Length: 333
Image 1 (cartoon, rainbow, N blue to C red):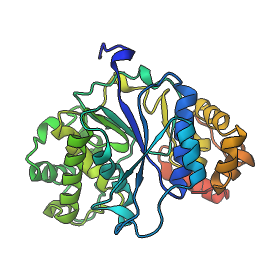
Image 2 (cartoon, one colour):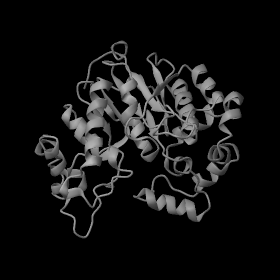
Image 3 (cartoon, rainbow, N blue to C red):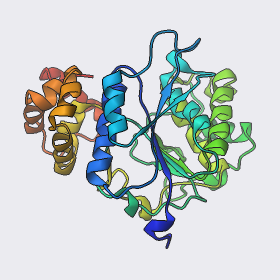
Image 4 (cartoon, helix red, strand yellow):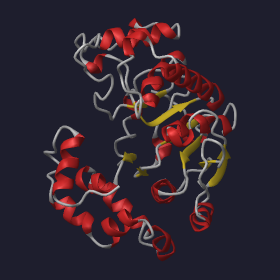
């Protein structure tokens, strides 16, 4: 475990914000950071894609949202989309890294995340990048004529000249998905966004342009970022997160994905933070413009959703939770 003191640990936090759902999630993220980690002194960056050839429609956040973000101490950082844009919006997390300060450690979070504890307590080892393990075995997808996990993942490591064997968790059985390095891209970190971003961009664009023969029947939308991310982290000397990062996806951050899912499965602390930060009138005025927030938080639907589930005995797969929410008329996105 790193022995760095809080004073030694300076890093930038970056999330994506743009018109639509993400601008409201971004505002809640920044408000939750200020609420739960008030001593965080480093830069809180909301990266915003610029309108252009790959984002032909207006994408800029509403002025009222931007004003509140700035009031909370966030910086709005525009960036250009050179490869992804509207056709693959998950690519924003790849392309925004080029706009971050070079050589300064960073942590990227998906915007649909709440900070629920003191993030300065997380002991990042910047020399060893890592990412979220709160994931299911979503890729590769088992197909009738597929070659198997080993063949597909090994073909990707070979494509970029990486050592496949050292990436494996040998404590897991062969051809079981957890044996292979696989992350949720909901958070990841590194020592230098330029190097990380260039590697991520190259791997993702090359995989999309020329999939290996072993993966030609595999879907890449929406999984491209999560296919490339393990290769990036392995290439930069990182790997699976250690216990020093347990607070992420734990007591310190909550990647809730959708508001009905938050109320269905997340901790009492996450709900408490969400409702506390959304209560001030100045934030309520803008947040209630987004229908899921209006209905789940301000009109009390979240409490009804919460009553449907036993958080000590949740369905193992997220899809089952979604199906229950849809059947009960509570699904919103």
